[in-house]
Image (cartoon, rainbow, N blue to C red; front, side):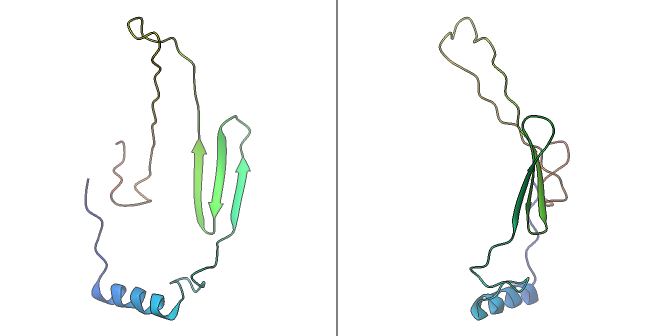
Length: 95
């Protein structure tokens, strides 16, 4: 996985100065929350979550399957995520 880009010296100094002044880069105070909006889709398990200008579209699904014959009391639990390369350069498409 590629490394995240390091902030430049100017970016680092700007962020540290904002923290020293008790404000965030977007002008909010350190204890100010962004507006949260959650809306549910027409299909089961679909939700659109907005936190300020950040948007996350989620879909959750589950299914019940028969256990393997040799492991009758064990279940299967799998988690799959798909993250867009727009979210971070560290996320590669199709991985």
